[in-house]
Length: 354
Image (cartoon, rainbow, N blue to C red; front, side):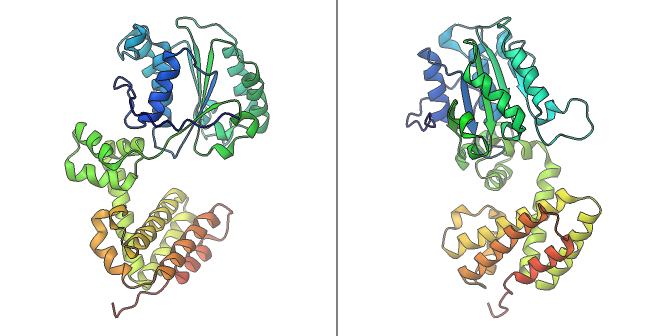
């Protein structure tokens, strides 16, 4: 089994259109420079961390037409076409792409999609030296599709480079993992995220807020910065969550409202509120242990500190566990109203004496 890349070097080229992840960039750049490009890579990490960005940057390096020392140049025909995802030697496969023109997004990448992919891989490159295949959502391959992909990984053409993208490597079969060079991406430092946002014109206070909320997920930070409405919705959910934690009656009323929203088909809104509540409980636990610098909702810190003093760490942990359990229950099609009402009744009651 190939070991994940955990490089200690930090000399990744500034030419790469990647923010953070210097170790991964350095390792990939070194592999290209030494002529030791692997036939398959497995990039893992949380959604929004920059996995796809790294995969496409690597594709640019492989398909760039500039001199080797200048790759990726970012402006040659190869780089531009990779950036636009229209290069003839680059193939992108994901759940969305596998769905074609279907109205609903599929839940699995089918065997037919992988068969078509295998036919493409067998063709020699048209313009560059490599044929690059990026498979996003690789953890969503059907069993038959995964078996078909494994055959390609076992006997790949010498000019093919496959890049698989997943959140959790354990979601893939060991037979696939063992045939890939693994690259594990972690959170980008908050200061780096803030600086990147400010460089894009985001006001300093707003950049700090987004960096705090996204916790090192640089891609998610850019998404929020580009969508003020999404950021506003998140702040509204955080405000509603604090009110729920502060007052059991408010929590009960909000739980019933969320259940009604769920019944009306607004499942994503309910899931988003529960996710924010889980982070708020986490923030309370951090404050209880004196780790305020790690709090996500820094703008609500004063109110959260007051709440944190109302409970013991054991009580806060109970609230967090109950919230996470409710999130899991929604995945099993439980009676939502009962689950959400039961959730808030399991939370510790605030001690009004504090």
